[in-house]
Length: 283
Ligand SMILES: NC(=O)c1ccc[n+]([C@@H]2O[C@H](COP(=O)([O-])OP(=O)(O)OC[C@H]3O[C@@H](n4cnc5c(N)ncnc54)[C@H](O)[C@@H]3O)[C@@H](O)[C@H]2O)c1
Image (cartoon, rainbow, N blue to C red; front, side, top):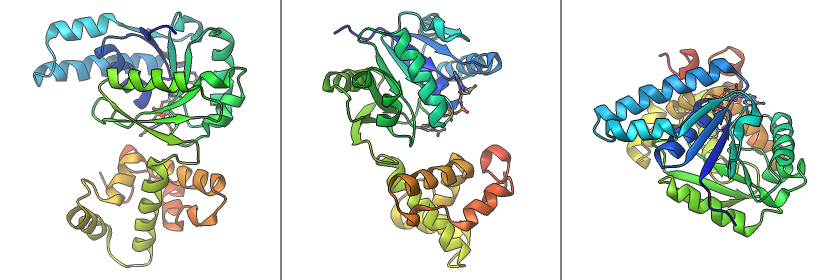
């Protein structure tokens, strides 16, 4: 079984960009691919900015940054992922798009390379079934912002080989992360536990139990949460929260996971949270 030396990342958005940055800083040859040349350029500019900031803060030296940058390659064609030992997919949260990518990757990488998805909610077993090598497919769920957040939730699909899991855990640790396992049920652990809490905060607001700042204040001061659930929803994106609730409802076959009407209403109004300038709060 070959040692992981080269990491390919498909999708250079918020998550793919962060994963690529951490991989390169951790010493892995890293190639990051996106179909959008604009996204790739934005990703590279973002890396330059964040790495420069790490130098200012004394977390990295100029030489560390130079070395990390020399390990990073930015491409727009999937064929240029080259000899990657693992490919981590971080494109849009859409099962059909992901399945098409995995099918293509499985045809390109026919050895013992690992095909991992950073999906936050789509079944790994379903993605793996689109390939002829489900034993090499696994979930490697990083958290935003990737350079800061310590956790990687590792999700085995039905057919994932235990050696693949071991290699992914070792990779996560080499990237300075802590890997914890979860099985392949809708929302895994993180979103299954977090999202219903956020959804319940919307219900409490809708029913007039308390105003948003008090709901957030109560959870911060009383439960020691670093961020209140409604603030956190704005940070994640209200559309993403609603989407994940629907995935839970479908996957766990229970209507109790449907998004709160108040959450749906804000999404329909275009109030998506921080990214749109307004969600529960105004920014
Ligand atoms: N944002 C989060 O907090 C978060 C946290 C954990 C996991 N995730 C998951 O990570 C994945 C990516 O999320 P994101 O927030 O980085 O999204 P994003 O929109 O910032 O980035 C997605 C990128 O994928 C690219 N893309 C689309 N189709 C492609 C294709 N066929 N080939 C290559 N690139 C393609 C887009 O151009 C875009 O740059 C999703 O599955 C999401 O659920 C997100």
